[in-house]
Length: 131
Image (tube, rainbow, N blue to C red; front, side, top):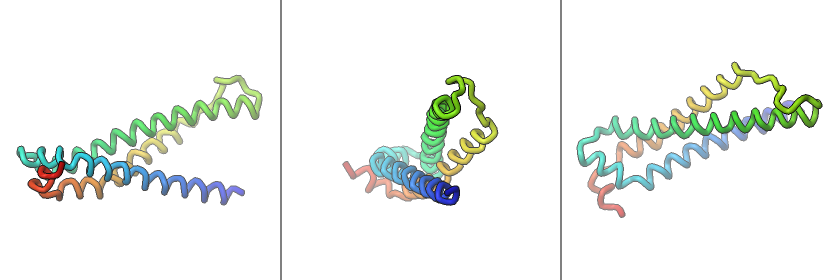
């Protein structure tokens, strides 16, 4: 039973990583013209890559914090329902939550590598010409 839960957890993580990569790739594609204008006015490829990675960091950071908040809230409700504890008399594993948040941010930065590279390699004139 525990092995099945770990397998489902692993599958959820892989799906989440693909979701982050897809979201960032779509963001880069939608802002292709904007990134081209940045490059045209003198922004280096490095700056464009850094901007996409920073966007990923912010998305994953806030997403991780929101996920932790919702998880702690649902955990409190489940402890109340299943164990009969007071609703907000919970134990929060702060170290595990910190490691999880750091892992989420790291995965977000790693997931941004491909979209950031793609954004930096886009031809300036082609990007500006697209509507």
